[in-house]
Structure formats: C-alpha cells, structure tokens
Length: 502
Image (cartoon, rainbow, N blue to C red; front, side, top):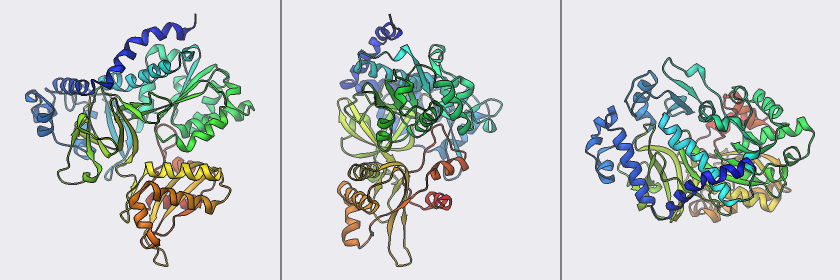
C-alpha cells in the first residue's frame, strides 16, 4: 500500500469543511473575527480600541482604524525587543522580512505561533487537499517534495526575536513528518547565497524521486535549469519521471508557463497556484481549469476591501467580504492572528465569483503606471504580454515597465525593459500587439493612446540575458520570495536596471 493511499483518507474531513466555503463564507468570516477580537482583547491594541466591547463587524469597523506598516512599526519594534501582549497575546518570536516602505529599507511582519499554524501551514495543507481531490490517481506522498526557501537574516536578529524570509521561517518550523519527505536538507534550504544554494539544491535533489515541487516560479526555474546542466538531461521529467505537481506562488505564472511546459512534458504534470504572502496565506486555486483562487475564509485572517477608485481618499468605503461585488478592483485589508489589525496589505484583487468567493490578483496598490491617467495595472500587463507572446512565438522571462514623462521631442510613452527566453519573430510586431492588447483590456489606456495625443506607442528595450538576475543579486534579493517590480509610476527601478544593461 502506498503512503499516499494511507494519507488520503485522513484528509477527507478537511475536504468536507472546504465545501462549506460555497454557502457559509459570511458565517465563517464572522467566527474568525470574533475569535481574533476575543483572543486579542487583553493586548495593548485590544485595550486601546476596546475589543472587549465589540460584538459584531460594524462595531469593529467603527472602533478600530485602518493601518499601514508605518502606523504599526512602533508596536512591532517593541515586540521585536521582547515585549509581550502588544498586538497579539504573548511574545512573538519570528518576523518575516519583506520589501521596504518609503521610510525604511525593510518591513518586519510578525509571524506568531498561531499565525504559523492556523494560516501559513493550513494553506499548504489545503493546497494538497484540493490537489488530491482533483487527482485521485496521485501518488504525491510516495516520493520527495522539493521545497525552495529563502534565508534567515541574522544581521536583523535581536536577543528576543529572529528574522528571515517567510519561506525560511516556514522551513525552520516545519512539522517533523513533512521534513522527512522534503529535499534539500535544512542547512542547504536556508543558505543566504542563492547561487551557491541553487547548485547544492540541484545536487541534493537530482538523484531523488521528486514527485512535487514548491516555490516561486522564477527561482524554481533557475534550480531546474541547474539540474539539467548537472545531469545532461534535456527535460526535467527525464530526471524525475514521477514528478506530478508544481505548487507555485509569489509572482504571476503566465510568463513562465510555456518554459515549464517545455522543461516538463509529462502528461501527468499539474500546476496549482496559491496566494501566500509574508502577512498570511489567502488563496488556493481549487480548480485547475479556472485561474482564479478560492479565498480561504476559515483561517486566522479576517478580510475587508476598499474599492480602488476610493483608495487613498481620506474616508474610503471599506467593505466586509459579504458586501463585495464581482468584477471590481479592490485593495485588500486584513486582520490576522499575528497581530496585524485592519492592515492595508498593498495587494489588489478582483472577485470572479461569490459562491464560493473566488478571485484573481490584479496587482499592487503601488505597482502600477498612472502617470497620464492610464491606470495600467499588473493584471493588464500580464494579459497583454501573453497575447503578444501567443502571436509572435516569444517567451518572456522577466520584465519591468515605467513611464517616459517627456523625451527630447516632448513625447510621452511607456518604456518596457524585457528579457526574452525566446525572442519574438518580429520585435516591432510584438510591441504593436502588446500596445493594442492593452488598449483592448484597459479603456483608460486606450483613451490616452487615442491618436497618439497623450501617449505615444510603447517602447520595448531588449534586456541582455541575466540583467534582472544581476540587479536582484546586487540588491541582495536573490531567491526566497523576492520579485522584480513589474510596473512603477517612477523610473527608479528601470533606470537602475538599464544601467546594468550593457
């Protein structure tokens, strides 16, 4: 009897619980809010905002303010110094290092014991539950799991707290059973130098029977290519014939899909996306034919949403999950079992369904281009690039885009720096298709492109191979959950990368 056939029945109970998402989401979310408020009522934050007197969502929304990292930073700094009962009961030991704010190089997101188990590990387990439900012939537990992770950041550690990439924190605290079926060994997984780690991971994993892989698509692709270099194989399924699933997240999979399909041509290969961030685990793709993800409504996360047309206003409308509408773009707000309260996470989503609640990630509140009123978001960019690749045979490896506010001829445009895995047959055609696709997807962009009056046709600059890798390395951002900023309203990122593009 296979190990998978033994484990599968143990997960059936959770499968039945997940079925309640379709008609009990509001009830589940209200229970989550009650549990979070009750548990945190005697913390400093809970006393300030009178959590003990809150009976329902409307009171919570009236009494507790929306927050950003800057507003919680002072509390988090004290927690890192060892203070107890500040934003969450007890002492929080672990902090996930995330990209910085306007005022700081890095954010340190608290990851409590509760948050680790009721959110992050719960998300990983539910990804497997849904995968097994959709794939009854799976033998996923009969081989090894290749799990990519980041590293600890000892230079940020303090006597009472430890810092690392979220993926490193998860590996450090991973349950013993999962650790037994995982590669590489923990010391390798937590190395800080990604280029050394990439080689060691490949060497440790290439002779194992790997059935499943997990990580950020860009970094996993680098590891898989190293495996091919070391083994001399042409395809990954020659090295790991029983490989059946890639659990991926962190960046949009669209630009990488064709490259993975070239590397892994086995008909039994599957892909499952999740939405896991330093702040929590929020969504899982439960249907392989549907790119949207189910919102995980019974974890230690309570969700609220701000319509993007009101984002940044002094008193924006804030909606609980059960008041959202499909087809609209929202900024996500979370309250969590790690002590983030009404925290504006910075991601934007659009719901595709309400029963159950399913959504797609549309971008970041700060990663967009709106220099001329065009309101271009990452979701638009991904769809436009996919169409340009489809029509020209190109494969995009990495990209970033920013506005050119005015060139020497007084012209304004969007400038795209693109690293191709496969060059388009005709670069000018690629640019034209991308431009026309963006106009079809985004009416604001179309209006600004009308007769080239406000915006000129976009410009494509071909990036040399490895330039994005070099830029990430120079910033100490290789591996883990680090990602290239896709769109920016300023030229800060693109100018830095262009300086290396020679």
